[in-house]
Image (cartoon, rainbow, N blue to C red; front, top):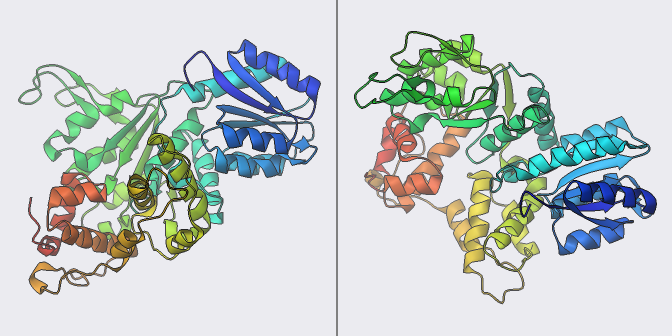
Amino acid sequence: MANTEEFSCLLVDDDVGFTSMLAKIVGEEGGKPVACHSVAAARDQIAHRTFDLVILDNGLPDGTGYEFYSHLVRVSPASVVAMITGAPELSQAMELTRNGLFDYLTKPLDASAFAALLRRARRRLQRPALESETDALLGNSPKMREVALQIQQAARHANATVLLLGETGTGKDLAARSLHRLAFEGQRAEAPYIAFNCPNVPADMFEAELFGSEKGAYTGADRRRAGLATAAHGGTLFLDEVAEIPLELQPKLLRFLEAREFRRLGATTLCHFEGRIVAATNRDLGEAVRAGRFREDLMYRLDVFSIHLPPLRERLEDLEVIAETLLRRLCEKYNRPQLPLRRGDLQALRAHRFPGNVRELRNLLERSLLRAEATAQDLHLDLEWLSGRRNATPPSNDSATPGPLPPTDRTLTAIERQEYDLIAKTLVSENGGIRRAANKLGLTHQALLRRLEKWPELRRAGGAAE
């Protein structure tokens, strides 16, 4: 939305009188309505501009709203879409809702109900927009439909801890935000969403950061400080990379999850937490338990309702829509004309395994766009860079290259194997620079150091140095 006073609204319905009535209500609610009465006219409108809100009828003279919806979410993913129809079919409504439909109303329509829908949609639009909020969750593959359904199911159970599993770059934070949005839609418009990146916080500050502290609780504590658990009260607390919490701190988290109570560092009284707790990890927690790095009771307490986000290579049918959506947003970000992807480049993308998942795809598109000539008619992907990532082999010098497997007494899981290989290759490409490698991998410096402690032989890659 341009500001808090107005929003653009596309009304798609073949009933001219009904559309006029809707347009009047939209105007009264601060919106600027545009009406069209066929799928063809609606396609033409969204081809030339983006609407904040789209109100879609199902029965149209040249098609159905159900069919048009799939096109709409591809070309205008940022739009909030609601459907109004006189002949509802519950199964189709549920399917659309799982795929992002904001709301579903039936005719005859009460004017006050429609005005309430507009106000709820407006609140959604006025929330601070996070770039690429749904990038990794785009797609209509069976696996992503299952993810969408599980997120909806989890959103209905306020007290259940949710565990998000998946490789780096699969969109666990985005799934947590989606769960939060669904859980508090129409209930608490301002419910807080607080993310706590577990490995980002030094071990000696973990309690103070999460639970807060009293004045004088530690050196430098010159005032009472509220922790992130307090900030998330009444909303969602997202514990990212939860498997990276040091073993000695895990009992404190376990007590918090079990009792939903915590004590500020240096305090004597307990505080109660009301809200949703979501955790995420790219680790195999069962393997971490067997290796003695994670408490078994904490694993069971976290894994109440788990959702696995599939890697991009397992849902290649979603690749084109994700790539096109990302490219469209990047063109808008850099004020460039919309550039199409070449068919040959899409074939090359399908042949790549994407160890960095959607994050890696976005990086490829962004670097390719920034290198494109101002007069380019389509986007030439930097396939040489992509090929280099796929085929890169470490130098032949054994002293600077990690072996095919770390010299441990256990076999890596599939997820750990991929992460190990990606870190090794990145360290080699960055000549052993840990901070540069962490930045390229999308990790914090401390998070990468933890992985190097776990796999010390990786330090040989490129002569790893601080």
